[in-house]
Length: 169
Image (cartoon, rainbow, N blue to C red; front, side, top):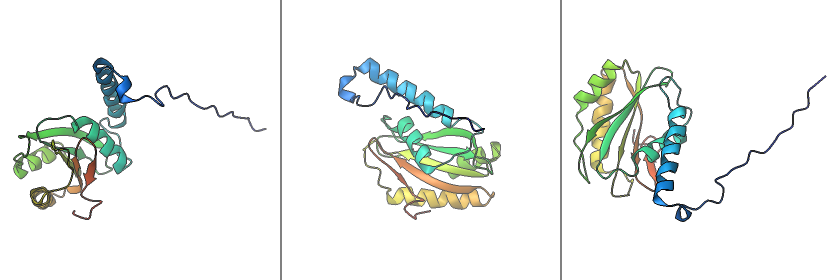
């Protein structure tokens, strides 16, 4: 005999809520809650299931940064998160990225793959020529130690760009 399972709709307490209806304290609380939800999805040892989830996590983490920040998600051979490291911080329009440090961290964490990321405080997520150059330099350096670069996300407040989806990697 088969059990009858009733599907119940879950109530969405946030549907229809507009940012303008929140005060600053409520907005900060909502962002903190969102970070907690996303950190559960991206905890150490969890496999990354989709580029969209990773983009959403990085957008929330980086969107309000006032200076450019560059980092890596270090992954094992099954694309499970080993660590997220914010490696370099720069100014409002650039940061210096050192491949040696990225490679050292990959070796230290025993990573098999990485996802590179950085933000554009300007609000425009389009990759620059400098972004493309450093991506290729890092990919070449990491290939020497058999670490794959899966993607490079550029994050801005309203959007993010996957360089892999653009065919740049």
